[in-house]
Length: 470
Length: 153
Image 1 (cartoon, rainbow over the protein chains, first blue to last red):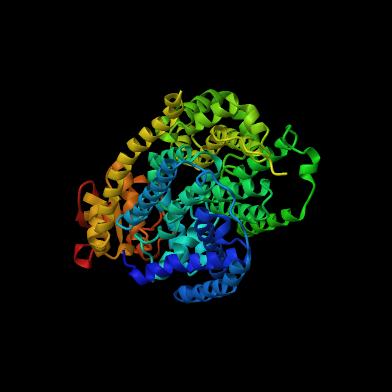
Image 2 (image 1 turned 30 degrees about the vertical axis):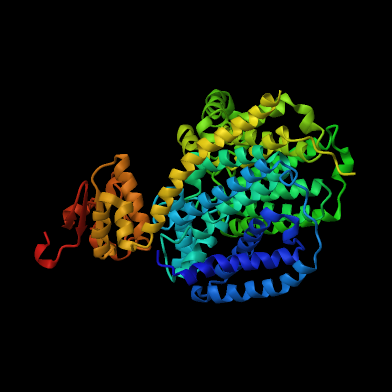
């Protein structure tokens, strides 16, 4: 890798500084999230960086000035955000760790330290392997290379994006590509070794964010076992080393989940954290549309369960204005695709001349008994792929229905998780692509993005029953 | 009673110990790789590409806009080699001709400098092999270049 230690410090440090500044503006001090706060800062920093770079490539401005220009923005955000951080009083949500016996506290801390060290070692190891194959190279990094080569979203870039001999999926969101472009800006050119850095660094951040949620959900030994299970899976190992967007998607969803649980616990910061997480996963991958649809559907359904407040839950409130933040990133992707005539191969119906719904109806009878058993065998009940967590979550939801149905925070989550799994199955029922190949090449890693959510559900179902806030 | 209450936690600790063992080995392998990351680009490319390094080096030495690269086989290994080398050579655009459909002919002017390597006369088959001179050859691949005047057929 061609980057010096100073350049690496800039590559990682500037987004983090910008993120800390953003958290200051959002009045989210470290005290409100202990473990997860640094992960939130990284996520917020990458969002700001992504937006900044997206504006830069739209303007086709010279890339050599990017580090300096973003450095100035990060410094400004940090300088103005820090005083707000100090001025904001916020007490942390109570977690299970402080109240646990000493051996559990030590098990939790040692597990977290070991898993973070492992996650950081994965980031460091990626520097020795160039990006050269798979979707990582053929889609994501190639798009960043095209941006670099054409100096931004220029006529040349658009022509190459439409050339399916060269690259597929011109409609995909830009977060991944601009984060790889960030590495090129520091390297002064295309660098197949450094391209992934900002993206794979989301691995350690994801585990911190997940640990923050698990620490509040169940006893520390349960949280530690779940963390070890998720981090050790082969799919996690491979996903942590590549610049694909599944890690980004999972990271955004865990932060959004944290925000949701906080909002339901009556914490004002919850909506802001939820908005940050949703913005991130919606700008990371098109699957975000499926996850957000499942989440909205789950919330709507849960409003009418015994724990819900019915129509009162759906009454508009000021906090909902935070939905404008993820809306901004969705609008960025939609407007780009509308302006240049790019569309999704699955949902647009331009592949076989039929829409996704029509294909779903037409293909389900023939495919259901192929896709359903495949998902059961290869994902849900597969100990190697999912550590049994999908199966365990579903079994616990069935065995202890009152536990989640009575919880205003967990009921929508459980329904959204189940809907997301069914939605994923429906995608493969409706796909216009050749079925075995499409499932084999994508279903495991897309399903993996739901695994941290499954871990949180398992923790809730095994943890102490929480009392609703007054 | 207390053993029964402790049993799940003991089981959990056992599982953690088992997973930690795997993590230890993975962490050591990761650190070894991270140490290799300082070895320099060429050495790392050799590690990553293995025997494909030969083709990558051959194409890197040439002006790839003026050569054609032929994969002689269609097996998964050759496909993998094509994508790996193509990705690493970008922004140089290389084309492996093994997967072109019969009768395919690039439109005049569509290949940039490489157009010079194609016979665009009416009815001429796209058969650059017949027009080109072999530049390099390896395990399952051949690189052709435009012949110098003395070699022209």
